[in-house]
Image (tube, rainbow, N blue to C red):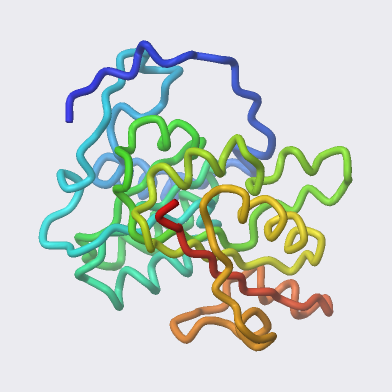
Length: 240
């Protein structure tokens, strides 16, 4: 595709959350730069490129049968775990927190994975350039909970994100959400189901027990250490 998206409304977007933490060490910065040159998706950030075009997902990978997206990959534990075990699946990881991207870069520098691409920025910019029905599976693992009620509109499970999410997902694609915040579960069930998704659970164990191909992230380990209970929600994109 070569559709230019410049004509789309360019409304101002607030971004909430951290973009950078403590300064990176020289080696971390070197590994980060190296991996971003190799793996980042070009021309995604709308602030630096007002003439972006819709991308062909098939151009990002070779010899893959499907493409998955992880939104907010943290330190990259789950992304690397999945990519190593599924070489036939392309994985796009999106993370605006540059220290988290640096952690993933360190892991990837020790591996030889041909099925990972990175967007170190706002997932909404990535949504802008992804074609309709181009993504097979999506992971949202321990997203920022924004616990204060007045901040709930900043959560990912709101229409601003979900309308575009369902657009880029194929019919029948899965959307996995892991969180240790019960109110996030409430909002997810309330909002996600409004946007052409079905909840696949048929019994309590379906959301109380982790997925069979799951690896605990550092956020989950912290939650368990602090006595919080994880929840595992699986949604499926409906045809209509």
